[in-house]
Image (cartoon, rainbow, N blue to C red):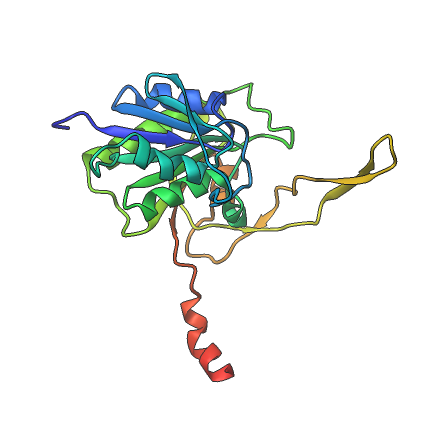
Length: 263
């Protein structure tokens, strides 16, 4: 690289997330890193943006800011206004390292992926990276973020040193298996799998007898969409890092003719 590149990073687990810190430390080896992260956890906020109230950046350290009650989308959108002068942009946006998976249709819920979506909407190469966990308690402490941080740096280097492989409004969604680095089998280019969902909600009552619900975690079950490509869930299950190209155009083109006839 002829000049030092700049990477903007965000997440949906909050500015104190160990995954965010691991990502920043890894990427600082190859570029200037600017962090803009939510003050608190914003999991499952998807690509939401805050329109009903003002937001404020709070400086934590040099090139490290938290956005008071903002979403990952807010963080990216406002960082481009606050931290990049005269229309300049970062060379890459990385959202993560998320604590937990973002695969299959869970992509539509993901605040982590939402941050990367905002990046490509702004014309910046972007990727989301998530550390899959072994169990419903999100237990990663037996192997940490070492593998995910190494993967993020490897892919970031490829993006910064070569042409970004995807076209307009397309991003990389990366999911890292819950295994030590020594057990990883490499990369697999995948499609988004088909999650099998249940409606898991738990009814409770507070001491005053008022009802409230906790939304539970779905079972980690899936099905293939076809035989041509391995899906993200299967790849991670088999010990591979899953890399899925995602595009923001959700039009079902194969149904346009049928829908015209129907109308």
